[in-house]
Picture 1: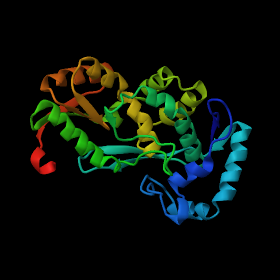
Picture 2: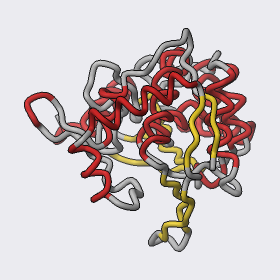
Picture 3: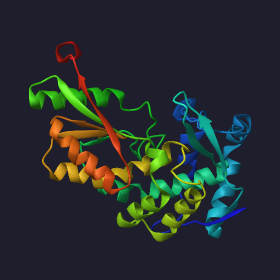
Picture 4: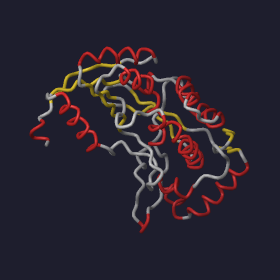
Length: 276
């Protein structure tokens, strides 16, 4: 059993009704909003049963939160095979632990986002006004295309250099993520809560769900700032850097090396007339 300390910055109880809706609930007017049933849920039928009696579940979780600690079954960790031959490390959380984790990450989100470069970082965002607080991987596709075309307009060309971080989640480490959270001002209880969940993954950062994808997005902050300080025109979508100047590849690669990562790059051409 995991016994984890629960705390929001400033105290109080999370809005579990909102967080529940973003995972397995329904939005206003009965519109289904849950899009995470593919996120390694072991028993979606059980989750559906809980959804039908959501208020009881939420009320019980609020009582647990006010007690200050959560005792939960340990997360299930397992490899997911991929076509490349490499396996993806995944982790499934019991629903009560998953909601508590979402509460912690949502509370830390404003501090983590302070370090994001406005209009430079796309994908895996956080929105406290939406039913689903954390963006899904499919969100932002149109935003990506617009950003790429805008980048090309600045350079009056049709080529962009893309640097893809190599095996990000297998190469990133919980210890360095802990440093990122601490430097962003996330309170110690939340840093320790999240670090304990991730530390037992036997290396790398596990795929869990959209909330963790948002959290991992901060890992590349040192690289973002290094590229911005160089004056290069760029943006990042998830773990890919889009560069107008090919010479900026070395800056991205040096930044990745400084945090224990590496990347591979390619030149892409866009038909700007057709896209517009």
